Length: 409
Image (tube, rainbow, N blue to C red):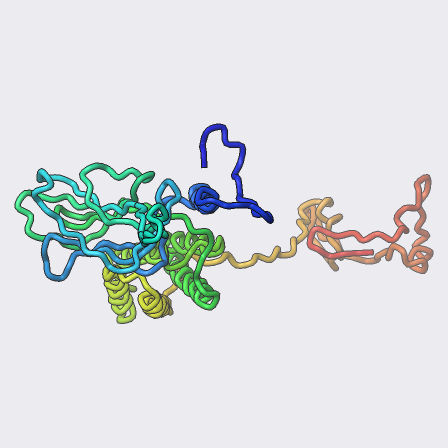
């Protein structure tokens, strides 16, 4: 559709007697193509859409040569084009095309190709291609990829004399001649695709790890705070419906790394816990989890193994501190002790709820010989008790409390 002073999208409208031409039908197709690309550009970020087939992952070949294998997958470029590979694709690196040492980029580019040509023998004016193939190519580039034209799948820094390309031993720090996947863009996908029962299982496991780490924080293990916060962050992402197989392995890499740091902290600063058999098993489980992540098999089987081993690891962590006294405990509830009246002077006597039979005050011993019971008419009359020139407010029904907590009414 024309971009000059475009007022909107024009959709073809059929009616009785409408004589269509090839232009009408091509315009109708162009309408849907433009709308789909607009949707991709505005509502999805460009990049590899995780979760389909092999995620366009680039691997070194087992034969150990200068070639890479791109797994099937789906991506969106900056123009909104759909880029899809249905089968694994092999791309050879021809060193004669590059001036080494140099970084080589493995990219995916969209292209269209007219196919299914037909010509009618009866009238050669009627001929043309019946289909347009929308496809993409895996190519090697010497320039930094432009997301508007291509999607980066990997990059490799090739040294002089390179004989083979390898998968990175440490994906976070690839070395020369190793496949670097750190710069691959992730395409936008709204919401989690994790099944509800696996989502619930993940939530329970994160809560279990968090509870165990909290027990270590109460015993003075500083690194356990990082485990707690890593679980808190993962739970927030889970509650925001953003966790699934596209990113859960990256999330757990952080959690497992913090668990390893916690184990190191315990070994150095808490020998009473470190020497336990259960904690030795905990360290072993952490290394098993690191090995699972290092396989880079980000699929459902790996996810289920991750859940199983991590749950076992969390159980062992809690058992390792069982019986250890916590350094940080909840404060016990303090009950206010009844206040005892101070009878150093007569003001102290006034605060006593009941008079004592005898008391020493001001150097003298005072003995109780009689008592007026207020609000008892018989006692008041017996002692000829009266209140003069004052409002008789003491007879109102009020609850009064002495300093020691005694209530009178």
